[in-house]
Amino acid sequence: MSFSLDLKEFVEKAKANAEQVVQKVALDLTYAVIDRSPVGKPELWAVNKTATEYNNEVKRLNAESLNDPANLTKNGRLRPGKLIRDSMDLVTGKGYVGGRFRGNWQVSFETPIEESIERIDPQGTGTKGAAAQIIQTFELGVGSIWIMNNLPYGPRLEYEAWSRQAPAGMVRISVTEFQIFVNNAVSGLDK
Image (cartoon, rainbow, N blue to C red; front, side):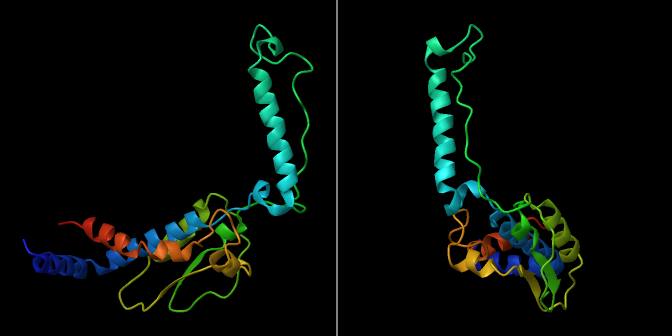
C-alpha cells in the first residue's frame, strides 16, 4: 500500500467523522494542558527553601536512627527520645490551597472567555468534566475552539519558567503533541 493511498483513506475516514475527530483532539489537547498545569507546592517555593531543607534533614535523621538496632524496641520502633519531633512551618498565605490555576482552564467556541473563575481543582477532575461538557457539543461550522486560563500569572507560568513543575509551560508542550492527538482520534474511528 502506498503512502498516497493511506493518506486518501485517512482523509475519507476523517471527513465522515469530522465532528468526532475534532471533539477527541480538542479533549486530548485540553486534558494534556490541564494535567501539565502546576499545582502550588509550598515545599518547592523559594521562600520555603530553608524550612524544606530543615524538614528533610529531620526526616533523614529519623530514617538513619531506624538503621541502628540500639535505637529500636523489640517491635522495630524507635525507642522513646530517639525520634526527632521538630519541623519548620512553610509559608503559604492564609487559607492557601493549591489548584486554582489548574481549575481555571475554560473552553468556549468562537470567542474567548475573558473572566477567571474561582474553581480550585488540584486533581483537574472537575475542570476536565466542565471542558468535556462544552467540547462534546461541538458541531461542524464552529470556527474556533478556545482553551484559556485568565489568571494573571498564567503568562509567567507558560513563558517565564515560573514553576519548577512546568518550566517549559503547559500549552506549548501540549501543542507539540497535536499530530499524535489527531492520529489517535482517527485511528479510533470505526472502520
